[in-house]
Image (cartoon, rainbow, N blue to C red):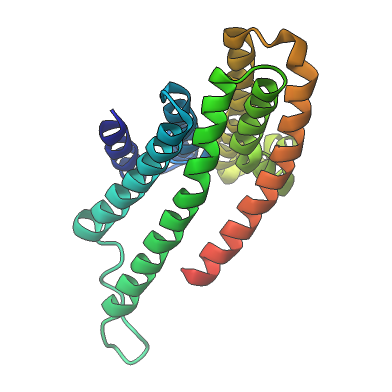
Amino acid sequence: MIVVTGAALGVLAFSVDAVDGAARQVLIAMVSSGLAWGSAALLAGSAAPDRRSAVTDATALLGLATLVYYFLVLVISRRWSGGTLVDGSSADRYGLRSLAIMTTAWLLVSMVAGPSLGLLGQLARAARLPNAALAAGAACGLLSGEGWLRITAAPPWRLWAVDGPEAAFARGVLVTEVVEVLVPLAVLAWLVSARRLWHGWLLALLAMAVTATLSAELWHLLRAAANQLG
């Protein structure tokens, strides 16, 4: 199941690249975002029988999804090829270099995010209060960080006020923000309900607030680094 899920995530993320318009923003949030891939890693950890398996399963899932995605970019879309330099020569070598760097960078991210989310998923399922509540809140805070970063960069009320040709795109971004913030809250509610962690609600919300802030900062750094590397 880890292999199948990882491969499916990579294929779905690659498929979204071919979609245009506002729908692309929404689909990215659903299948090709930190929320989508992080949720899969969290569930892999939650389903694992022990902590070691939770860490290895979640990490393998994210690593495989990354490899499948960039392999498809390499051999099918080939968006790294076809460019030319100022002197008219091919820029393919630089495109391949950029692709290799991005693959390596996201594999390194998987090596950090996989163990973290896998372990949090396992603790949220198997640990006792207050550790289970803290783990559930921390996991969902990590999942919502990208959404909070989007909201900081483009507040919903500004997106709603956009009119004219850009309105459809702005609405797509708005839906993306809503999905990336509300879905982690729904996941947290499900974890609390499934584990009967009602007495740990405040701890879970506090952990979510702290890790959401840290996650948003990390996403900001990752995007800045990706822009530099790309």
